[in-house]
Amino acid sequence: MKIMIVDDSRVVHLEMKKMLADTEVEIVGFCRDGEEALEQYEELQPELVTLDIVMPGMDGLETLEELKKRWPEARVLMVSSLAYDDTMERASELGALGFLFKPFTKESLLEGLQAAMEATAE
Image 1 (spheres, rainbow, N blue to C red):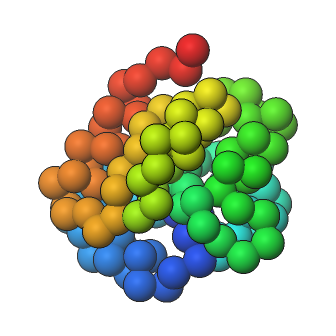
Image 2: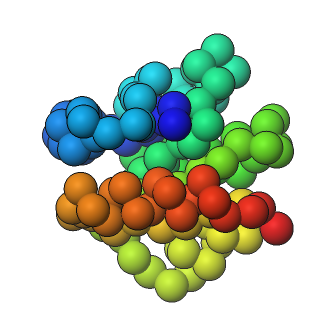
Image 3: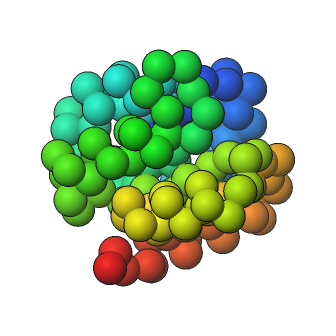
């Protein structure tokens, strides 16, 4: 599974890289903000995008909305420490296939990625 990580935290990127090192998951890209993610998506063609919500510039929900407009087939897993019901509901309405809460464990990360890959967008 090829994934693109969109998160302004370098720590999150390094943690995911470490957790996924011995798995079938390949990180094909790491973007620090929504604008960069939109620029790189087409070139990288990830099977799944992990998307943080709170980022400078374009936030995760705006990025998700634009990503789904341009590439309706994009598969997105939201990753955030902000677990408000309305935020999760909005992400789901915009087409997110799941929600992973920070801090996460290797097990919860792998489960979240797998569930998002198996989910069908409504």
